[in-house]
Image (cartoon, rainbow over all chains, first blue to last red; front, side, top):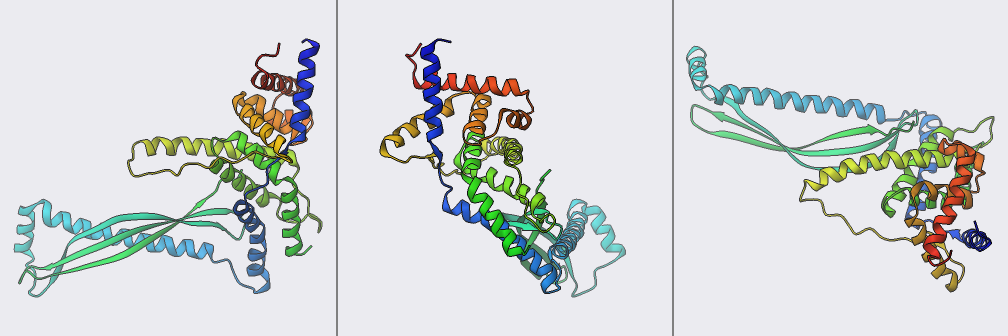
Length: 169
Length: 178
C-alpha cells in the first residue's frame, strides 16, 4: 500500500466520522415509542385495576367462532353435495323419507373471502407480541321449500381474527 | 422503578441509539420501508427481553446485542420479502407504492450535504460484508472484538474487512487514485 493510498484511506475514514446518521422519521419514532408505552398499558391492566388481559380470551372466542362457522359451512356443504351430486340417491331418499310439507331445507352455503385487514400488534400477558389479521368473509345460506318452490336466502358478514405470534428468538 | 420511568428510560436509550440503528438497518435492507419495519421489529424483540427492570434498575440492552437483533430481524425480513415477492409476481392486483428515498446522514452544512449524498451512494455500492463492518465500527462505535462477536467471525477478519471496506470506498470515491 502506497503512502498516497494510506493518506486517502485516512481522509475517507475522517470524512465518514464527520457524518452523523440522519434523524428518525417522526412517524417511526412515534411508533417505536408506543412499544415502550405498551408496558404501562399492560402493567396497569394487570395489577392496578385487577383486570386480566383479554387477549387469550379473545383468542379462544375467535377460535370458537371460527369453528362454529366452519362447522355450519361443512354441514351445509355436505347437504348441498347430497342434494346435487347424486340425483338417484336424492330421489331414493325422498321416497323413503318424504319431505314434510312447508319445510325448508338448506340447499346451498357459500363463504366468499372479501379481504384481510391488518389489526396491528398486540402484546399478550406474557409479553409475547402478536400480529392481528382480520379475515373478512361474506357467508350466504340458501334454503328452499320443495313443496311450493319458495326460498329463503340469508347473507351475513363474518370475520375471523387470527393472532399470529411474532417470532422473537 | 415505576412503569413510567421504565418507559422513559427506554425512550432515552432509543433516542441515544435510534439513528445509528436505523442506519445499520438501512444498510441491511433493500428499501426505506423495509429498514423501518426491521428496526421496529428488532426493538420489539429487545423490549420483550429487556422490559423488566433488574433489581429495580433499568438495564439497557448492550448496543452489540441491538445490532445482532437488527441483523437477525433483517435476515428474517428478507426471507419473508422474497416469498412475498414471488407471490406478488403471480398476482396482478398488488400495486406497490414507489419507495421513498431517505438520506442516511444528517449533514451539518451545504457542502457536507453533497458529500453525505456521495458517501451514501458509495456505501450502497460496496459489498454488504464490508459495509456492515464499516457501519458498526464508525457509527456503531463497536470494537473489532465486538464486531467479530456480532458477526461470528474472527477479530482479525473484522479488522481486515474494515480496511477492505475503506479501500472499496476509495475505489468508488476516487476511481483515478492509485
